Image: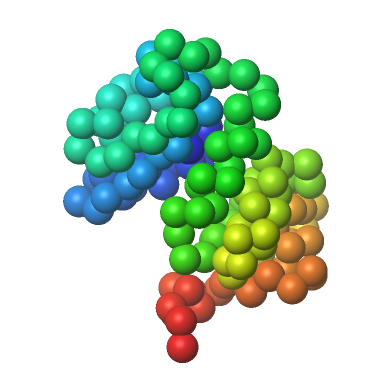
Length: 139
């Protein structure tokens, strides 16, 4: 995912720390969205993995992004939600992960901050709260 904010930051941190990263996009490779992440998409496609289920010339459409989220959740053993608004697309990914039998973890956020409403609600609903990296390691 090349969304603005935490997604972009996560990719950049992985690349900057000699890690690996995967991005699933909701368009073809010729139509990177958002446009400001074209350079990042190029780096990921050359040195990591940039996935799309659409032909290269397909432009992003609103309905592509929820469809893409099922692939994002399928790639990992668990889903770790760092930020999510009350009506965030991240919550669609959470639903996909749960349907796939994946565990969902969430980082609690400050009360009253819009990007914390979804994560805090996930914790209320039973997602595992993550306070340290050790909370992500299976016991």
